[in-house]
Each structure stands twice: as C-alpha cells, then as structure tokens.
Amino acid sequence: MSDAHLTRPARPPAGPAAPPTHLAPPPVPLMDPRRVYDAWGAAAEGAVLDVLRGHTYVRGPQVAALEAEFAARVGVSEAVAVDSGTDALILLLREVFEAAPPERREVIVPAFTFVATASAVVHAGGRPVFADVHPDTQNLDAASVRDRLTPATAAVIPVHLYGAPADMQALERVLPPGPQRPVVIEDAAQAVDACVEDRQAGALARAGAFSFYPSKNLGAAGDGGMVTTSDPALAQALRALRDHGQGARRYEHPRVGTNSRMDELQAAVLRAKLPHLGAWTEARRAVAARYVEAFAGTRVVPQRVLPGHASAWHLFTVRVPDREPLVRRLADGGIACGIYYPIPLNRQACFEAYEPDPCPVAERLAGEVLSLPCFPGLTGPEQDRVIEAVLSVPGLA
Ligand SMILES: Cc1ncc(COP(=O)(O)O)c(C=O)c1O
Image 1: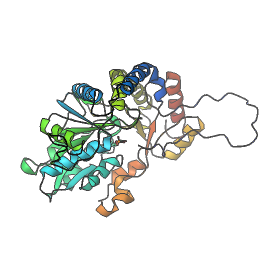
Image 2 (image 1 turned 180 degrees about the vertical axis):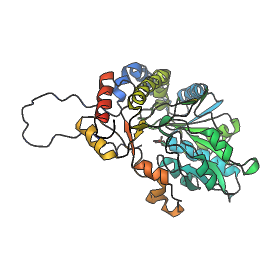
Image 3 (image 1 turned 90 degrees about the horizontal axis):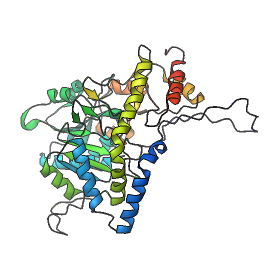
Image 4 (image 1 turned 45 degrees about the vertical axis):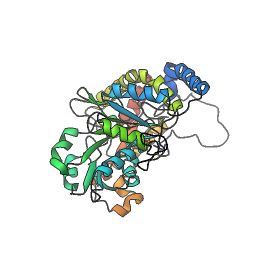
C-alpha cells in the first residue's frame, strides 16, 4: 500500500523564519511503528543476527516455526508463508483455477479495496468482476455479489476492509449450492487478529490471504504474506507453487511454479513481533472505541462493525458529507490523515478492459472516507487533539 495518498500536516511557507510567538504542538502521525519498537526490537535484532550467523536464509526453521505459530493463532491447521499478500492471493487463485473448468475464470471482488485484490485475479489468469459494497460497513455487499454471479464465477474474494470482517454469512447465503458454488477466499491482508465470535479472520472460508507489508498491524521489515487454510492438500499445492512447482523430488517439477518464498530474516522479525500482536490489537480497539464514542450523534460516521464481529482496526475510517474542510482543518492542526481509497477499482484505468459495471456506493465512498490516526502508542492527548479538530469543523459536530 503506497503512502502517496497520505495527507501530511501543512508545511510552513518558505522564507525568513519569524521568531516563534508560540510553540506548535508536534504533529500527530497517521501511524508510527517507532512507538512500539522497544517491545520487540531487541528480540528481533538478536534473531536476525542468529539468522545471519547461521547462514540459512531460505527454506529454514524460522519460516517453519512462523507457519506453525501463525496457524495456531488463526485457528487453522495450515499456514503457508509467501513473499507478499499479493502472492498469497495469486497462488490461491491459481489453485482455484487449476481445479475449475477453463470457462470458469471470473472472480468477484469488491470495487472498494486496495488494487492488489483485483490485480491478483489478472495475474492468476482470471477476469475480475467488481461488486459494490455496503455504505455502512464499506465491505462487500452480498446483494451486489448475487447480481454479478454467472456460471463462469470461480471464486469470490471478500475483503475485511480496514480490519473489519466482511459479512461472510450474508455472502454464503447468496452463493449457489453444489458444484457451481464459487470458492470463497478471504482477503485478510488488513485483518490479522480480527474475528467473528470466536473465529479469526483467515479461518472463515476455504482460505485466507494475509499481508505483512511494513505498515500492516503485523508488519515485516520488508514484504511478506501468508495463506491460511485447513485443507492440507491445498497447503501442499501452495508449498510447491511458491517454490518453482517442485514435486516430491528435488529438480522434479510437475507444475510451473514461481519463487514466492518468505525468507528467514522476515520470518525471524515476524516471530519477534507476534507475541505482542494481541496487546497491539487491544490498544487499537481502545483508540477506536474512544473515537466511536466521541463521534456518536455527529455527522462523522465511523465504519460500522457488525454485531459479533471484532475489528482489528488496521485503519479507523469515517465518512463525512464534505471531506475537504476536514482535510484542511487536520492539516492546519498538524494531524495526518489518509484516504483509502480515492478511486474505486471499477474506475481504475488498469481494469477498463474488463468493462466493470457501475458501483455507485464505492464511487460515493471514495469521495467521503477519511482515516484518522489509530495505532498502538497514540497518546490520550494526541487523540484529544484529533477529536477536537474533527468536531471543530463547521457542520460536523
Ligand atoms: C486489501 C489488501 N489486499 C492485498 C494487499 C496486498 O498485500 P501486499 O502489499 O503484501 O502484496 C494489500 C496490501 O496493502 C491490501 O491492503
């Protein structure tokens, strides 16, 4: 996820510096990984050094241990580490297509998500079909999925956007039974630690795809991803695909694979962070709960989390009727914010050839959403400043 769209606090105009009349408070970032480094940094530094001195950089014990620990946390029997969330989706879709007749290559994805959800479909050899989202949850709208289903639909990818689980039950209800039933793959890239009742994201469908991009709730020191599933045959196929399609014997390749292995250094870093993830998620939940309370009854509408669902609050996102004055007010107050996502995927030039249907809700949301600072280590006074700035915009309180 590129940071190019982030709105940063306004810079002072260039020119001779005037003597300060008052000291401006320090900027409030949208996210700040430095604030939790003390919790895991020393362990990671030690583990990285061990990997360097051990000289096993790929196919080693760190990746195997991370897979076991991650599977246990998500509550599935298998986790397959790969080198990005995008590759997790691509390899999963390749398996879906391998098992489907060649005329079934459509994959329904939400129009309101990061581009990788849909570009993975193209890379795997499929055709992305864009469904609309629900205005309150900003997640896939089951009714829109029902409208897009055809005999060519091989899979549906609900995204747990901003860390909030999509409505999987509503989705299951609109899918046809029997052999025509599309495979459901969770895009849980933003949703590590999110859950529905006592089941974690990544354990809610046939398989889940996670991203460890550095800004994610569980971020690597580079790129990384994971597939979760309780289907051992699927996991075995993915392990082969990520390693050049190698079969049981070395240099025997029954299928064309790729190189999508996670390396030992990334696994070591992720293992040092994993024990702290629960506390970080709780910290995000506390920040989010305070925002929800502060904005209740105002025209600032937070993403709706469904009953029984717990968001991982990768991003705390609100909708406002007129975004520009709020963006300006935050910038003036030294508060960073982000817009995820300013262009819905059905309007992206790269998918024009697939002739997407209109997705009016996604198109509206692209002009209304705004993400506020929400991360472990955000202080109470910083959050006070954010809330005060938001509610000081005329017409919002
Ligand atoms: C919803 C979603 N899907 C897929 C991805 C792709 O993950 P990665 O950047 O690890 O390839 C991301 C990453 O930002 C994402 O947010």
